[in-house]
Length: 335
Ligand code: C2E
Ligand code: CA
Ligand code: CA
Image (cartoon, rainbow, N blue to C red; front, side):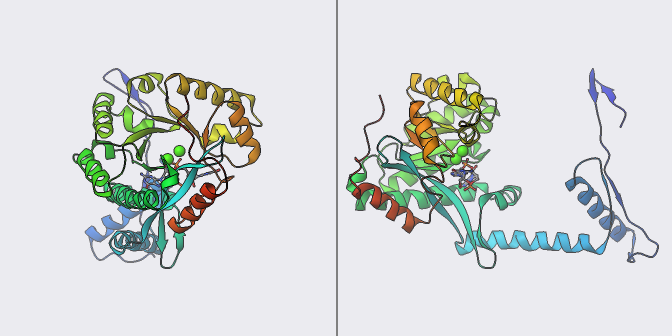
């Protein structure tokens, strides 16, 4: 682990060790089998954190079997239609009316029940399934939104946002797919919103700028997600064609206890408004936070205080109540 000096840089190597015993342990038939086992042990050592060691044992075989089973399960989930969008309302904090929804992926697993994205996105990414997920989410949410707009003309400028994953923005046919999906559902301009994070933009800002511009021309609107958690280069905001800025829930959740968070939320809201962006706060867990956000001049919020991500039918009930309950229909976009 001594640093190596290469081309003027200090490189700090770590070593992971996999061990297999040929004595008293399971018998390996030949050298190839022995190497396979030791590789499994190295893999195990690496997953446990770099710089560790692991010994081969029977348990490693079952781990890799259960991973194989999970992979097969997930692949099938796409074929069998077990993955679907749930919809979390995004609320106009002034009127209480539903302004739109964020589509969040859920896996209805036949045995495990409802699986949240954190538990399958990593695997889906490793398996190269993120583009399929993106297409599925966009297609289904666009259809759903079109239905809602048709059944609830009072909903006005209702939108639905879909998360793009890192790398999706570099996919060859993304713009064409988005244009087709919007056309097929006959959605008004801007009704389908795509959420991207700074991670998407940083890899190749010039290329990202071009794709974002073309997505907008194709009729999508654009949100910068999780603002404040990454590098938050302010130049992205000024240069790229975003409509919406989403303040990460970390700042919102702590704004009642932490003066720093409250100040950050206020400045981000002001920054957004100066750049003519809609600002959406995430993590609005209670009425007190909603109040603080309103005081900070933030007009839109989403969070468990309103509703978690709901299955389509329940989301429609929520929308209906918001329309029926005397609260003003969607207020004009904030000046
Ligand atoms: P995100 O885009 O930041 O989505 C918001 C997450 O915050 C959701 O978690 C939502 O359920 C949760 N949340 C909403 N309100 C509150 C609140 O008041 N308090 C707290 N503590 N949390 C709240 P979820 O659905 O588990 O999604 C997690 C992440 O997975 C998302 O974070 C997004 O990055 C990713 N994701 C979800 N669906 C998709 C998808 O279809 N495609 C891609 N590429 N990523 C997705
Ligand atoms: Ca999001
Ligand atoms: Ca977010």
